[in-house]
Length: 350
Image (spheres, rainbow, N blue to C red):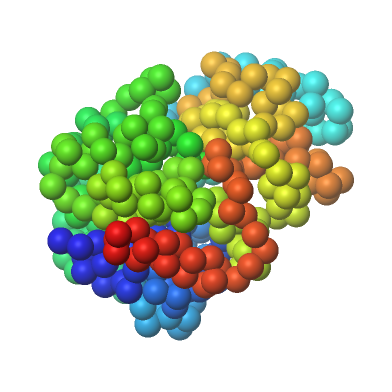
């Protein structure tokens, strides 16, 4: 089945969900331009989620995607939290922050029946998941709404698992992609390979449509994805400077500096995610065994981030960004999406 037919969109181009770079405005613009706009929901409170879904309903009559995480919340580990705060102690002292005043908190919530209670009233055309899929009874509930289910795979094994367990299409997330790695069958980052190595292997291993993601920033990348068997493309980083995006000033400034040096890091949430290298990553190293399990690392970083950003510094900010930020431009999201759609049409006509 063609991806456009599955999703109900004009073009097989998906604006990737980006928790730190968007609200419903970006998703609405992408959907109205003929692609699949995506709303990142993992960091939203229940009331904010309801409000954003209401905005999506009011802003577009085209298909859209809502994205959730499927992690299992970890048991808090007091010793590990203490070690993490000790590693951050020099920074707390620098900014005169008393670590005893910092509450522990998850920072990210998984998809649950309580969340589904809110989403069900809107019956979104597409629901996508990161870190696997929700439990079967919850996935069945989503499908009962008529929603199509997408999920991210970072290895061939994950793609096969997702198809076997009910995904209608698979996002092949190459190692170049910004934000959190969707890995869920392994914690070994050495298993993570590039988009154009991963993509043809996944296409050969599954029968459902495969969507290429990671490092795709221009017509050449779109054409390469098409040539390697992708049914469509998912693009995130390229939209971060669009006026509809909510990337904060330090994030935008880091991207505008050009030739962004990125790395996988677990410092900001406890799980590997690709972002622009900043002071914290340089000084602690991008991967630290002291960081609490995802998403518990978030709380101790939050006050440092707030203090630094108030000074215009990105020292403690998660600057999620893919390895190819060359297409980031301050142009309307609709214009950018149509450029990618045109590139896909040209590739398909050859």
